[in-house]
Image (cartoon, rainbow, N blue to C red; front, top):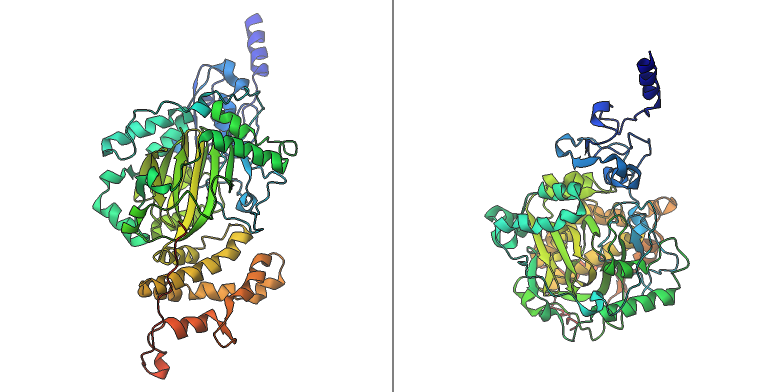
Length: 538
């Protein structure tokens, strides 16, 4: 009888379990109370033990690995085979909240009050788009004081590991660098179809050449510097001065100085990054030190380079899959190392991106279905070129600074046309949406003036429907669809001709760049407009 009573008492004290998601029925055997192995699927967002809900399986994973359940000695493994095909109750990320130069952490995509997205000229700057804080912090921990005599200032001895240009067999070695990210993240990346630049197949080369200007390229970092590049110490000092000038440290829950501290002491649960800010003293746009490499002109010709930015990211910072609408060159400073995963903007890949638009964890959701994937590990000896439209995700292997610049090419308009027709800007902030029409028109004109007439005309014709939407003034009547930035810019699409009369871009396009008139007027040759060379700022 005593045994029976004890058993009943034990049964009553055992906590009730909660189903972790809608698509996995609760099975108590799958959730041992201690000394067991647990499999977490991508669709699971609720803790079976305490019932707490989380934004994603990654947050649930870290909750189960945390101090609360440490004594239970549970082992967590990813269950890739049980990933649900339908994702429910996943919060949609408001990408508009990431438009300012912000301090991000995995505890929140926090915009710091006062971190003004305005440059010295008063114009918001588009970001390099290395973003994507992934998870949430449960508690703040104390940070060790950062000494400038530390290894951050002195620089670590460079690793002798092979660089990104390596044979196919070294991909496994490259991905070993993700071990510290945890088994789920590494398993997701291992499930992607990837090769290195030197082991690309003929089909991969075709996918890149057909969908964008060219494939990603790696150059010597020294080719990108006309002056001595800034050191990590100089970037740290300038960044701290910028933070102090903006008086941010006391105005936000997330102290931006943590990004600097975490270069010394990384925090896997809560990495903090400073994204897309400008340091004109070290990286000016006028008389710049950072330029496009001359060797790039063998593949594409860069024009209008600018928007030089800095990113400060610690180890464990992961930037989710995204697309940049400009071509770009990036190079690390000091000991910073990053693992880049890239895919071409093929129709299939863009359709998959559109299916995940507005949602987080895109690489986990659609990565295994993307085609033409490449992987590169880059450090401060290399400069990485990414063509416009390239889908990419980035893992920081060793914390530090990354500097970047943006530019356009005569072939960029082809990609921009495809991106616009695939509603690339659907979930972007309104300022970026208002900039796209001008960028597209400038790209068309650049193609026409640089002997890429067919590319420019095709892009114009293929994007006509989208152009009409930009001029649809009916959407101005609704506050939900009105874009104040674009309303102010729309009038700029009219320009003065030589006689001082108003001329729309369409009229300018027909009169200056088309070789023949409209068919209803009969074919008649017209004088082609002369080239208008634009010097690159070197």
